[in-house]
Length: 258
Image (cartoon, rainbow, N blue to C red; front, side, top):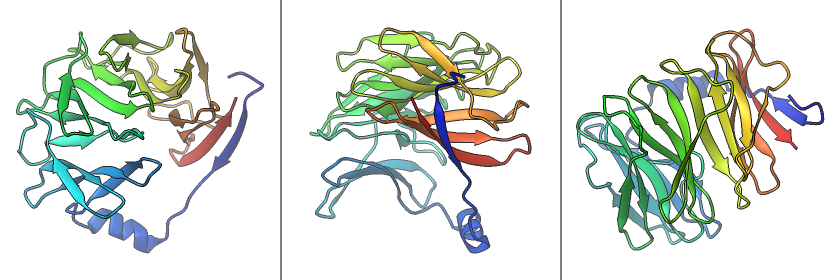
């Protein structure tokens, strides 16, 4: 960790009533995630058969539901909107869909409803593998990860013209469930990322526009399997938020200032 980094850490304790609601409430309601500045919201909902669909809600309250071409309609499968930043100010929506073989594929939905689907070369074609398009920047550059045939994760960056750059943090593990994932991206092309090492411990990382990767750990993050630092969102100033798990497997939020 760079010693000049500064952190703000916090822990949220939910009341028991909220915990019960989260566990027991049926997943048949919309889950809104990202929002454009004018107030449009993109998210997902589960129908009565537990199939996942995407939606767009405009500021006037109207809804547009959508499914990516090739998305399966079996329970638990379907179309997922990116969970970091999933919609641009211009109305382009990013995400991934799961096909009938339980393989993930990336997509972009244009403002007019047209779809572009893609797969990162090297992505596995077995169940639970594929391309996970998890974020879109203001310029429609997307980031995410793909899972290879051995179950390892690798990060990627896709430009609006379709050029894909793959990358791995230097100390990322190569076993199943290990590897590198990319989160938010700034307008300048700086990416917040995370990786799990050969011991299944999570660490934060930042990829500069030139491809250089620096790693960091939040003070207090645990060093056991499943513990560590997991960044998620980065703003234009390079401030990163995310979570970390301590030595007792308790999760806390953090804010990292460059």
